[in-house]
Amino acid sequence: MIQCSYWILIVAAVLCPLLWLGTPKDFWPLAFGAAAATAIAVLLVVIQAAEDAQPDVQQTSTGFSAFFLAFGTMAFAFGGHPTFPTVQDDMKEGRKFGKAVLFAYIMIILLYIPIIVTGFAVYGDKLEHNILKNMTSGGLQYASLILVTLHLLTASNIVWSAVFQETEEILKVPKHFGWKRALVRTGLLLIAVFIAESIPTFGVLLDLLGASTMSFLAFIFPCLFYLILTRQFKAAAVESGEIDRLPAGIFDIPLWEKTLIYEIIIVGLFAAVSGTYAGFSELVAPAAFTRPCYLAGASANTCEG
Image (tube, rainbow, N blue to C red; front, side, top):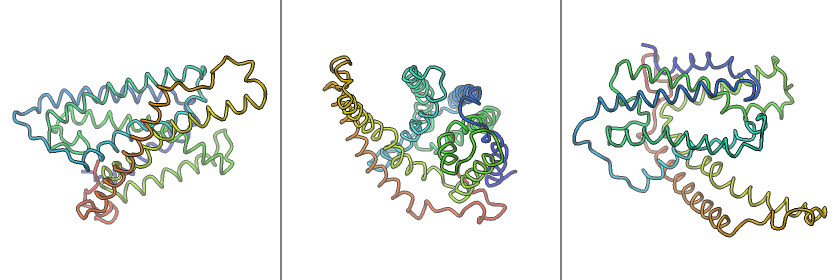
């Protein structure tokens, strides 16, 4: 059987050429492939879970730490904001970006709810970080694993796009395809491979990163930036004299909207601090430490999916 550490290298080798593509507009069919693969995988997981269902499923009690660790994972799942600017920039009709984001989040919720309900109702306190590990070994589990891997292969370029473009901008890499782009993107992929090999228990790191970085990226920063940009646009319009030619109150944020924005910021900040504390506490716990794949020996299979 091929061990986890080798699978990481195999997937990275397959993924590498796909990452050399340009911006999302150059590989938009991959997005449809990723969404389709995920939807089918969710269906297979629900079907297998229905077969695995047992009476008297035990549930774990949820405390402070468990709740905010779960929040970190959920924030990571909804943290696509760093990629949004590159997607909007590549859209033919950028003004429809809001509708596209709304549709995307609705689809994400529709895909996550069955997995959440299934994991809670069927597997209970036996639920792993990766629900695929709970599935009974067989055709449905293998098909789900293949589909999830296909999703990662096709969606990774979209997720990495912002990092690639920013890095290439700093290093003055030409925007057309060339050896410099391939070298930079391969280098970044190798860094990701090293992290994956070095931290086998990735679920713990996911909780920490989701609660810390993604809470700011998904909840706090968008609200703050919206308030700051609105104020800046209004100040620029007043300074240039265009404010008199614009509709009255165009830059004024309604009270109900301000209230909602500040509520999101406060709740997001509290969740970020609490989740970061809970995630860090779990990460430094003795039970969380596992030897990296490349130090555990060729026969070890310590990587957590």
